[in-house]
Every structure is written in C-alpha cells, then in structure tokens.
Length: 171
Image 1 (cartoon, helix red, strand yellow):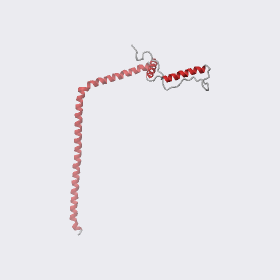
Image 2: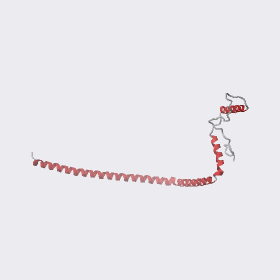
Image 3: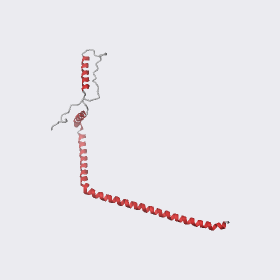
C-alpha cells in the first residue's frame, strides 16, 4: 500500500471531520440560542407573575388597608413630635423634675424588693440588743468589742410609699 492509495481515504476522513465540525458548530449555536430564548421566556413569565401579584396586592391594599395605614402613620408622626417636645420640656426643667423622679424611682424599686423575713428581723433585734448591752459596759463574748456596723443582708427593706404614688391613691 502506497501513499497514493491512502490519499482518497484521508480525503474522505477530512471531509467527514469538516462536516462533523460544521454540524457541531450548528448544534452548539442552536443550543445557545435555545438557552437564551428559554432565559428570556423565564424572565418574561417571572415579570408577568410579579406584576399580577403586585396588581392584586395593590387592589387589596387600596380597598382595605390604605385608609387605616394613612391614619396610623399620621398618628406615629404626631406621637414622635409630641415625644420630642416632651423631651425638650423635661430637659429644660430637669432640675425641678429630678426630686420627683428620684422619689418615684425609689418607690418603684421598693415594690420589687422583698421584705425582711421574720428570722432576719429577729437577728437584727438581737444584734441591736447585744450592741446596747456592749455599750452599757457588760462583757459580751470573748473580745468584748463593740462594732457599730449593722447586720448585712442581701435583701432590702421596703421603702415608704411617697404621697400620690401608692396603689390606693384617690384623686
């Protein structure tokens, strides 16, 4: 077999490869165009659905919510303006308002503190009695040292209720 005998076979393979490349290029172009058209169709459908949903929500909003939300937003704006004006007035009169606010704060904190238990009250009474005996000169305990410090506990005694802030106030 000589090279001259292989030439027609090589020419046929070359022709087949050329046609195969052309078919592949044509197929890839068709696939690319199909993918682009599919994406455009998908976006068009998405836009159509979003528009329809927005249209129906807009009709619902106008029919049932618009009037109430306009009034609510006006009320919120008015409350913000009044709160700002109140803050300005409170800041200008802070020296006059401070004692009343402190009294109310102390009363309010006393409402959440628990009262002394009977045991703690008895311990305090015993400590006070022993302290008076110590200062009277009687020997108490091994060291006979009188310490004027009160008994420390974790609980706070209730404060007295200021006038006008009690739960049974009458106006």
